[in-house]
Length: 166
Image 1 (tube, rainbow, N blue to C red):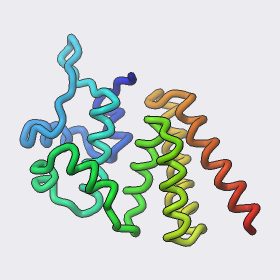
Image 2 (image 1 turned 90 degrees about the vertical axis):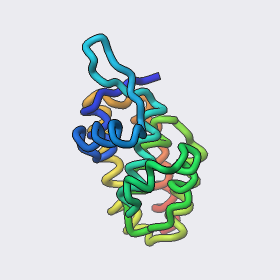
Image 3 (image 1 turned 135 degrees about the horizontal axis):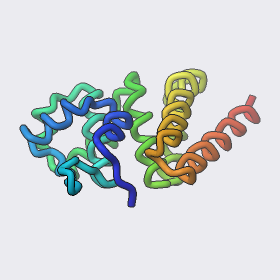
Image 4 (image 1 turned 45 degrees about the vertical axis):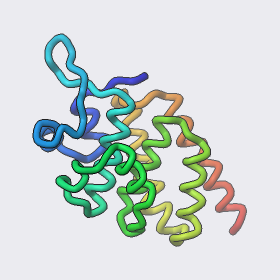
C-alpha cells in the first residue's frame, strides 16, 4: 500500500490542497490519516475515491451533490459518465487503473475510447497527456516504477496495434 501527502493528491487529481481540506471539513468526503506531526496522509483507497470525486467534479457535478452520494454511487456515476469531450475524466480513470495495475480495465477503457472517438483525438488529448502525467508522477515518487512501466507497456502495445492497422 502506498501513502500520499496532500501535495501528491493535488498533483494527481488537479484539486488544490485548500479546496480538498475545505471539502474534507465541510462535507467529510475523505478522511485522511494523520502523521505524528498532524499532517494528513492518504492511502490508495483515499486516492481512488478523490480521483472519482475529481472526475465527477470536472465532469460538471456540483460538489454538494457529490457529497450526498455514497462511495458506491460515486464509483458507478464515474464509470457511467458519458461526457466524451472531457478528456480529464479518462486520464483520471487511466491513472486509477495504473495505480491498481488493473490491466483488464485499462484495456477495456482504451478499446471503448478507440471505438467512440477518432484515434488521433485519443492519442493527442488523452494518451499523450496521460504519458506525461505518469512520467511526472514517477519522477516525483508518487507512483512506483512498476506502475509506470505497467502503463507505458500497455500503451506501447496499443500504439503498435494502431500502427499495424494503418
